[in-house]
Length: 181
Image (cartoon, rainbow, N blue to C red; front, side, top):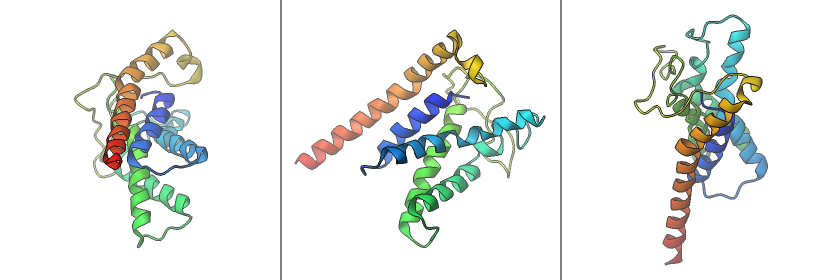
C-alpha cells in the first residue's frame, strides 16, 4: 500500500482540484480520513483472515462498490440528508467516491502485495495498474518510521504529491486566467 500520509495528502490535493468551494479545515480532515478508510481491512490480519481473502487486505474495502457506498455515506453526512433525489447528494457522492477510490488507485500503483480487488464482490481477482512506480509501504507504525519509511515517502512525493500539486496549480492558473478576462 501507499503510506497513509500520502493517501491523506493526495486526497486533499485531489479534492481541491474537484471543488472550488472554500471549505473548512474540519472538512479537509474529513477528506483525509475518507482516503484511508479502505485500509481498515488491515484488522483482518488480527483475526487470522488471509491477505488474499474477500475481507483480507486490499479485498472488498478497495473495490469500486465499497468506494461508492462510502461516498454515498460521506455525502449524506456532509449534507446532513440522505435525499437521493437531490443533485447535490449525487455530486458529493461522486466527490467522496473519488476521494475514497484514490486510495485504491494508489495501492494498485505499488510494487508489492497481491493487487487490489477492484470489482469485488462480483469478481474477486486482484489487479495492479500497468504503471507501478510506488514502493509498497510497510504495515505498522514502528516499521514505517525508519530509513525505509523516509525512502518510501520521498518516492511517493515524487510520483504522487508533486504531480498532484502541479495539476492543482495548473487548474488554479487556468481558472484565474479564465475569470480575469
